[in-house]
Image (cartoon, rainbow, N blue to C red; front, side, top):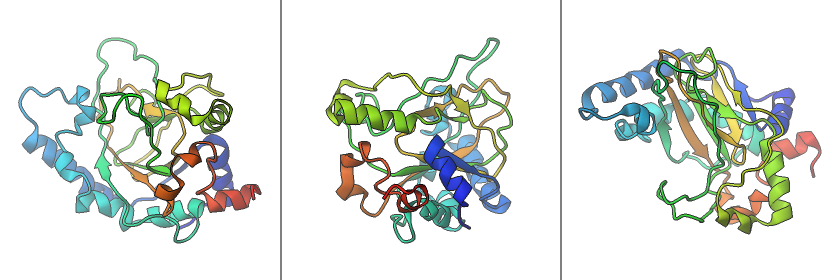
Amino acid sequence: MKLTTEQICEFYHRGYVKIPGAISKSMVDTARQAINYSIGTLSPKGLNLAKHHGGGEVVSNLNSSPMIKDLYHKSPVISLTESLLGDGNLKVPIGRTTPASRFPNVLGKAPPEPTGHIDNMGNGRNGKPKGSYHRGFTCFGIIYLADVPEPYSGNFTVWPGSHHVYEDYLNKEGIEILSNGQPRIDQPEPPHMITGQTGDLILAHFLVYHCASPNASPNIRYATIARMSHVDCAKNGNDCFTDIWREFFCVREVMGLD
């Protein structure tokens, strides 16, 4: 399975693309069963799952487990991602693949608006020193393991076009400004809370402004996430903060960037 020219153009302009039904139901069911089993058998008494990275600490035993890795390695994910990077340019096996469930966290009131961030930055609370920055991957791969039919349901949320804004900003100010923390700059569009169905895949650029939306729904948002890398990601390093299509050979070709 490959992305169409229209999908590649959408990824270029908006910073993400959703591929409906990319992952088979049987693979999704196996992964969701493993997640629910871990939550049901390993959850410490009294742990507030809504405040612990969506229960990620509870199901950390599944990080890069076969049930989760297979979603990426035994599905069209690799070929779809290489539709952006070029054949053979995705580093495989894919690194850390993790469950990313989001429990309902808003009760009896209107949900707050989503607040985003860009990855690859340390704040002293995420295991990275405050003021540090290091580009460690090329694009996200998010798989919905259950339907997410409405906004404010823990949706993977993006600010469309934000990757272009950040590239321009960092070219103007220099990437060293990232040592001051998350740049809070005007975005070209409001946040888009991506709805979808079981088995949908979302590919998103590493520099897109994003978050998981508040979950005011009655349901757990079941998903997995992988941060996937070009084979030259380590060599290119932080240079891609200001040259954001360097590792996207097929995007450059379709958009005439070379």
